[in-house]
Length: 68
Length: 167
Image 1 (cartoon, rainbow over the protein chains, first blue to last red):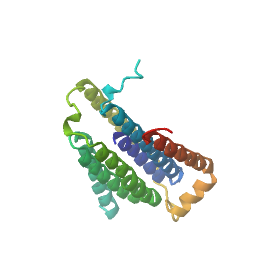
Image 2 (image 1 turned 90 degrees about the horizontal axis):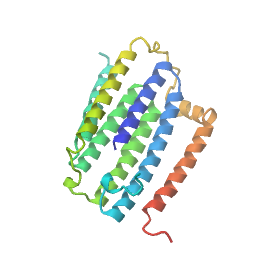
Image 3 (image 1 turned 90 degrees about the vertical axis):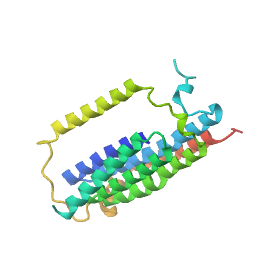
Image 4 (image 1 turned 30 degrees about the vertical axis):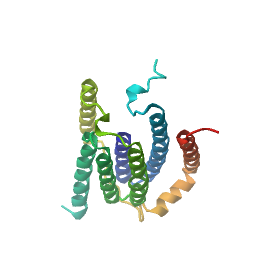
C-alpha cells in the first residue's frame, strides 16, 4: 500500500508539471503509472496469497529461501 | 482566496493527513486501506483543480475502485491477527526512512522556487478525455499497446500464482 502512495506522489508531480507547461505528456505518463500499479498489485498480492498458503505467515523474515 | 485555491488546499491537507494515517496505522490493516481510499479521493480532487479531469476520473475508478478493493480482499482473505506484525524491531530502518524523506523534501523545497515556468494559458478542453485520448492514440500509441501487453501478462501471472495447484 505504501508503494501505491509513492506512485501517487509521482502522479501528482506529473499532473502538476503538465498543468504548469500546458502539455498532455504528464497525463499520459500518469495513465501508464496507473497501469503499472494495477499490474504490480495483482501480481504482488498473488505472491502474498501463495506465500501465506505455503508458510502460514506474511512476515518477510520467514521467506528467506532465495536469500543469499 | 479563490474557490480553486480553497479546494486545492483542502484536498491537499486531507490527502497528507490520510496518507499519514495510513502509514502510521500498522495495527489495523483494514482501517489503513480505508485511509488509502480517502487519500486517493482527495488526490482526485487535486487533479480536478489541476485541470486533469480524465486522470481524476481514472484515479477514482482504478485506484479507489479497484486497487484498494483488491487490497481489502486479500487482507480479509488472509485474516491476520493484529499482532502478526512485530513493531519496534527495525528502528534503524525507520530512522533511515524518515531521514531520507526529510532530506528529499528539503532538497525539493530548495529547488522549486525560481525553477518553475510561468503558468501557461491552457487550450480549450485541456485534460479532457478528447485531448488526452488524441495524444494517447497518436504520439503514445506504442506505450499504450505495450501497457495492454503488460496488463495481460500480469493477469495471467496473478491467476497462475493464486492457483492452488498447477495441473
